[in-house]
Amino acid sequence: MLEPLSPLIALAGGLLLGAGAAMLLLVTGRIAGVSGMFASLVRISDGGPPWRVAAGFVIGLPLGAALVSIFLRAPDIAVTSSAPLLIAAGLLVGFGTRLGGGCTSGHGVCGISRLSRRSLVATATFMAAAMTTIFIARHLIGG
Image (cartoon, rainbow, N blue to C red; front, side, top):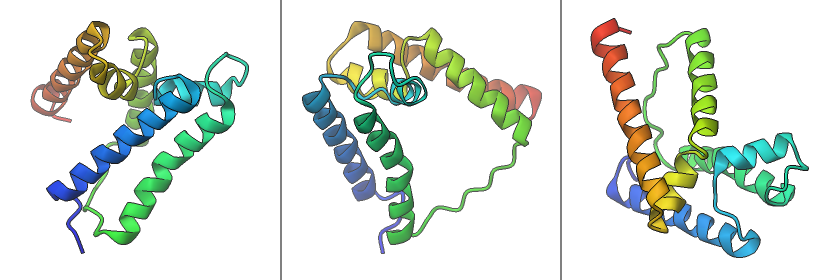
């Protein structure tokens, strides 16, 4: 049984993400922005990718994680934050996604692979914001 954090698992995951993003681009002509796909599932008539493709992609993400946890030893994860804090964090991520015009998958995976300057700046910005937030929350506030 492979360890979940082994380089082979990371390589396989990266190859699968890249293949999925490339296949979605070839089939629909759209990049794999998961937040945009999720939004198109909520509002089917927004001109996004066909809802069946979006549903398959969005449903495939947790399904893939479930399959990996079945066939590999799942890492020990303990969520120590409160439910209200997690909900607030999720809402802030959604707000940031709309404000930045895309999410980590759209900018980080697809945009950088296309050498999009906008995506390079967006990815650097959200990574810096994430590091700053973690530093403040863990070291200054103590949460």
